Length: 289
Image 1 (tube, rainbow, N blue to C red):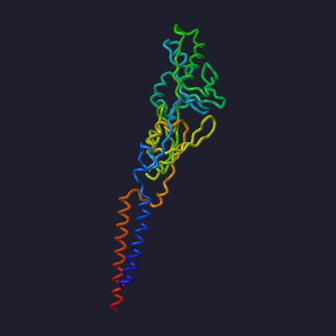
Image 2 (cartoon, helix red, strand yellow; image 1 turned 60 degrees about the vertical axis):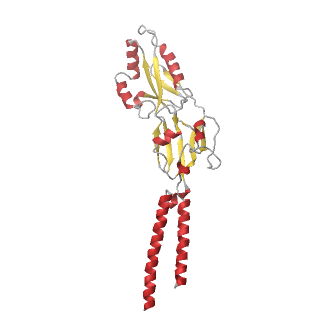
Image 3 (cartoon, rainbow, N blue to C red; image 1 turned 90 degrees about the vertical axis):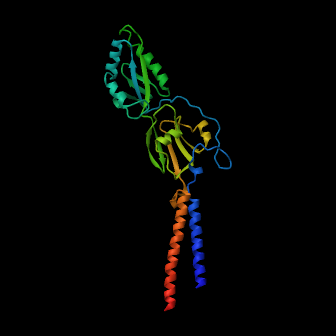
C-alpha cells in the first residue's frame, strides 16, 4: 500500500509540475504588452535610429479630393456654386463628412483617374498626381482665375482641397477592420487605439506595416513596445497602410496571467486529491473483503 501511495503521489507531482511549467510559460506578462518601454539589452527591447520625417501626403491614383471654391464676389461665388454643385448642399455635406474621414458623398468629391488627373468643372482635366493638397490648391486657383475675368469686381478665388476616404487596415488577434485616418498626422498609437488595441495575445514585438512606396510594396517590421519608435519611420500611419500583428505562441494554452495559472494548478491538485481519495476508498474496501 505505501508503495502504491508513493507512486501515485509521485505521478501527481510530475503532472502538476508539467501543468505549472506549461501554464507559466504561456502567461502574458506586462513586458510583452506594455508600450513606451525604454530600449535595453536586458529586456530585449530594440532601439531605432532617429529617422522620423513627416512629409505632406502626395496624391495617388484612386484618391478622392474634396474641393470647394470661394469668392467674396456674389456673382463669382454663384458661378462656382452652380458649376461645381455646391450651393446649400455644402452645409449638409460638411455635416456628413469632416476632413480626413471616409464618409464623403461621391457626388461632391473628385476621383483621381488612372492618368493622374481629375475632371473639374470649368477647368477640365487637371493633373494632381504626386502633388500635395497645397500644391493642388495653388494650381486650381491659378486655373480658375482665368474664368472670372468677366465676373464681378474681385478677380480672385480661393479653393479648399482635402483628401477624403483616407483609410488604413488592421489585422490582429484582437480584431480586424478598416479605419479612417481622422487627421493629417496619425501615429501608430492612435491607429491601434482607434482599432480597439490588438488583443492580449498579439505579439507586439513583431508588428508589420505593409506600405506602398513609389509604386513598390514594402513590408516593415518593428517592435511597437519600444519608446524609440516615436523618432522612427514607423511612427506615422499613411493612407492604405495595412498593420499586421501576429499571435503569440502561448495562446494555445488559453491562460493570460499568473493568477489564472495558479488557480488552474490549485484546481488540478484539488481534483487529484479528490480522485486519490476515491481510489483509496475502493482499494480499502477491496482489501477488507
